Image (cartoon, rainbow, N blue to C red; front, side, top):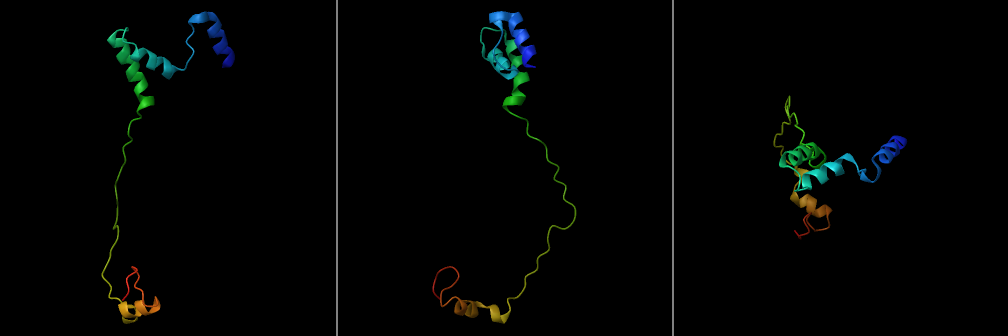
Length: 96
């Protein structure tokens, strides 16, 4: 590949473009001296590299996501017992 690039560079001489395809497209669409049609064609070709398209997402959900029922707190886990286990400090940092 490098040999081919050197051969092309030799054939074109000093007029060879020293950059990649995207750089060439940017140079074309930014050059206000070129016809608008040429600039638009270059911009259309380059846009996929500059601003990739958003991919679509299939959001099909089958089945039940979750089923929750309220459960009573057992007597031994109520507030007074929880405070006693934390040495008098409630979980949120306030005293009982």
